[in-house]
Image 1: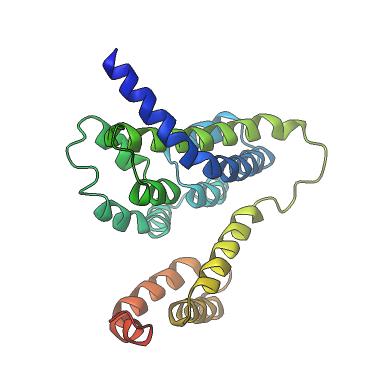
Image 2: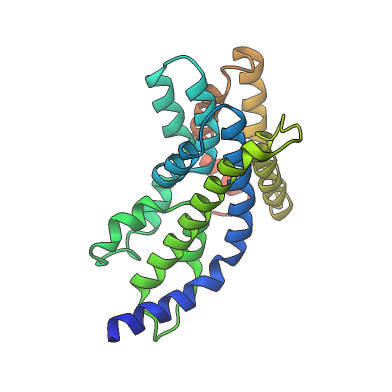
Length: 236
């Protein structure tokens, strides 16, 4: 009974933090499910992929990979590069997730951008167990994405309007994130470096093969120029 009460308190504390994620995940999840449907996949594809992969940008890209030629090494490289930021999320959460027992593997698996933001910064009430709080934040966000993707896959076949271009929703989301970051930053050294490297790789490799080289270039340049950029931005 005491365990049940503890879990309920944690759920009630976690849910309000995830409401904005619910709105965003359902919209993107619906778009993803519809995109999968119009690309020729049944509803169980977005259901299983959102359940097992749980990586929004990677799942959108995976549609193109499934429709293209069999290229396991390129697929692996793309997945690693697109999701590499989660390595840094994991390092940042080592202390918070320490000693959480059986919950820890699922918390590691479900550590998406939005869950990281909440679990890293949320002020947990004193009477709420932090392990259950982290667990419910992760679980709720995961369920939002899975349910949105599945519903999108189910209703996609019922749509009568032209869905051409719906895959652009993920691009639009990243454009909005980029603009928000641009507005927050006083200096734009890193952003301009990324734009320049991407534009150069686009010219050199073409539209079909520039993503991986550009991300590799950005990683190398930011690593090499980290100190000068931090000095210019007043971080040192």
